[in-house]
Length: 306
Image (cartoon, rainbow, N blue to C red; front, side):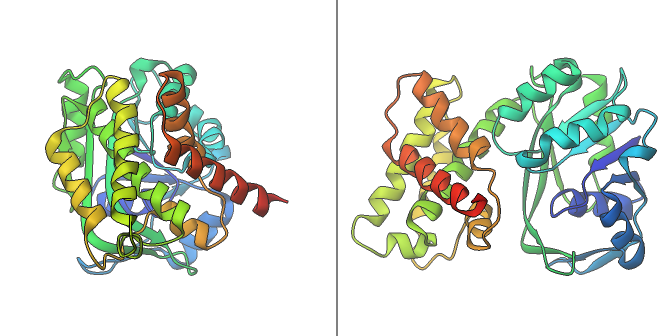
């Protein structure tokens, strides 16, 4: 199947490189400047599994004229609108759009633009970042893609997607409960981003001070309450795992949102914390820590934009 990876950043570049190395038909949709860099230097991954470099096949939006079978959409929410415009010529009647963005807002945006039947549910678990040289650096061994039809059915096309993605050098899971998985990831990343950004500290630094541990756990309760009220209560085993991460002494765990904040970069907090807070408000939930984090990050965003 023909795979179009929208973007060659930390996530799309990582999984696209793995798929290409495994012999899949992969093309990266990139900006002209990124295409020039990749043609010159290749796509390079620095990983605990071993470093890897490929010469990727790339295409720019003005060269895109025919549909693909799979669109792997992994841009951050800030780039979603431009990505939709760029990739539109590649979306045909049979195209599967497989997004792995954080939160849930993108699902509605994609469905309005391309029709809900085109859009799959997806969760990506990987910790990667682009370094100043444009290389993809993987921080730990976590590397899994989860996917499924939004209604939970096992269709012929989702089996095709599963066959295409399996055995390519990373973990995969075909899920019949993908919406639940997406909400659970949203709760986890929202909780971590909330406490890191609100308190400007790692998890270990937060839970090392009086009331730090209790406050981090309160943040989890707030985020998970929105999921529950929305019809997607998190599983006990999942919540237990997140709680353990929040109380681990000496943990250096931080969210990608916090790391972006430390660099003075624009943040996708509106699609993660902002949207979660707004959904809670619409359900008459009180989430004071979530509200405080949204105010903190809006002040930050205003400061770097002025």
